[in-house]
Image (cartoon, rainbow, N blue to C red; front, side, top):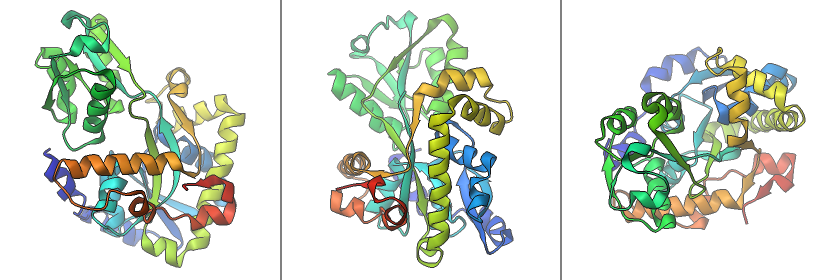
Amino acid sequence: MSFKAYLTALSVGASALIAVSQAANAKDIVLGSAPNLQTVPILVALDKGYFKDEQLTLKLVKFVSGRRALEALIGGQLDIAFMAEYPVAIAALRKQKFATISTISRYLANRLISKGSVGFKTISDLNGKKIGTTRGSNTEYFTEALMKKAGIKAEVLNVSPPDIVPALARGDIDAGVMFPDFYASAKKALGSDYREYKSDAYVAQFVLSASPEMLSKRPKEVQGFLKALIKAEKFIKANPTEAQKIYSKATGGRITFEMAKSRWSEADYAIELNKGLVNLLVSEAKWVVSKGAVKGAATAANMKKYLATAPLMAIDPSRVTID
């Protein structure tokens, strides 16, 4: 997908979800999300009944990407949506109608994947070689940040998400920067030739965004939703083993308990709005504008307009540190 096509997709409503939205009860919160490592607080809150404690009923709609969830949110088919921060920066530049109410997690293990057979030992070994990633996504942003931090120059090729692993296996590219969901398939496909390089050049902050209607007409429900997640955050810290079991169960066994345990250190959880999120949004917005695909104010002041601080401030002002 081209960069401009990616941006155009953000303005397209997910019409297939209209029936789902209409079928939901008036008091349901229609939530776009998926069971994964980054959404563990939601999974725990559901399992432990924390949403019910706040007299809330959730209608869950599964999404494979945060971009699609944001499309549905802006299109009026969702009340709250889970996503990485990257689509937020683009939507803010486009002045779309939504607001982010909280972070939920950070992903700490973004990585570049290569092969021993191409001589990969350190990131500097990729100088002058080919790196495949998906243009217009946060993986491209990570790729450029990684190269800049490492001080290397490489040919960056545009490869669609499901094609990066096959391209790497065939030798069309020397390394790939892909979405985390493809890490396991890369390891399986490459076998003993698999090599990885983890980097903190980009640490994704996963967030929850709400519709204007949810914020203006149902503020108490938004507060209740966040209160349930704060309870879950505290439970996760106090009971990591049980939280890992809940995560595994929520995936239907796709992620075993042992897998959940081994991946646990790759994420952390916090229900808050922090300065780091603002800085990352500004950095990404400046990067997007520099590509020439969209115009807008890539400033902290503009990004803050799309952070709805009131719900968290009403619960615990110490969780809002965006200034």
